[in-house]
Image (cartoon, rainbow, N blue to C red; front, side, top):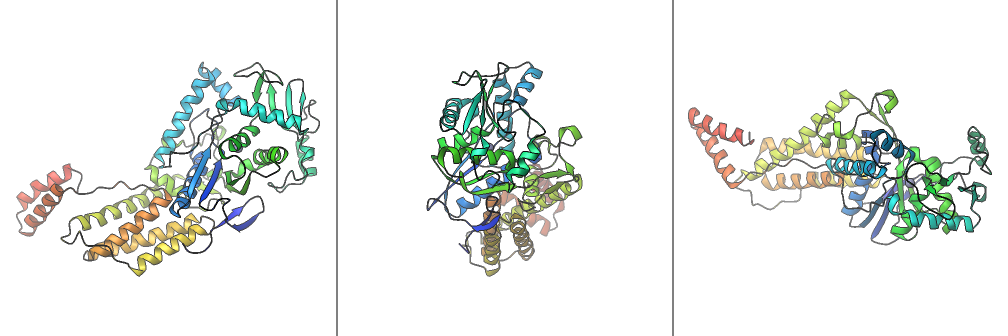
Length: 448
Ligand SMILES: [Zn+2]
């Protein structure tokens, strides 16, 4: 299919041709949610983007191995559990379930590896033990810290200089650390959920889980590691530091990061009271997905009540166009005619693929989809060329499937077709009273 695919790699800062480690396979890991609350639409952005990336690879014929974790051990979960008077496990289970429900409503592919921290504790303790053994980590009074000074390349991903980082980190000085940049691998604590380990009774820090899970699932380097741009530093930088220490590689060949989502120009946050939860999104969920893909994944995106209305209308238009296409096809005497090849449809598909190949440029891909919708509406009005209508509907569905936009299809049964024809015939013969009776039935069935 068309030219070589290109992706912007945060690690090098360049737009690079994508070459997978294995010929027909792509491995992707995306940092998942900390499960202490419902997700808001900003949290949904990486989920939707990386699901779209996966869908595109699959459409290209790759087998995609996709993993995204649940951080189910965290101070915020412990605090929430106290607040709710429940054990931590109940809190995390509840929000894992809610998360899965939310992303399913956004039509994300649900079959992927979903490792949890609580199920990876032994592996995490072993990994930290290895880091200590190799001299990359040290134990102080039961806490374990990573020795950042041992990683010559530290700061590469976030493109920061070590000196600047040290200056910046001086604010919170922990007397137990050798350097302010050293990060926690294991925290000694009695509070909340904890485990026995050779270091102390406690729980792991956040940065080790992803490296351990990637190792466990994929057994080495992967193609793509993704997440929101807010994770580049320190989380992803720290993942790389640990992997270099343990395995001498930077985890992934391509590091992809999505930009932030803003609410009417401001950060979406609880303290500002402007959080829109995915479950409470006031329009069709496909309008939300369309909105999230309407801006290039690396750029910031702005949510406003006004543009959401516009996306809801746009989605309605796409959905009703597909149903009109099917209606024309289903009601035609020519409905079994095979589809033909049409240059304008193929050109749209080609331009769509080119947009996707160019760093997953979904806004341009959506423009191509809209172009095909326009062509569809012209052909629907003409209403004659069934093979062309079929080619168009197939093209639109192909694009929608890659973007993960699922239309609400209304297909006519044989009985519906008879009824609609009867109604049309009666109207044509000006037998309005009888026509109205059938019209009422059709309306009841939601077919008018
Ligand atoms: Zn991570």
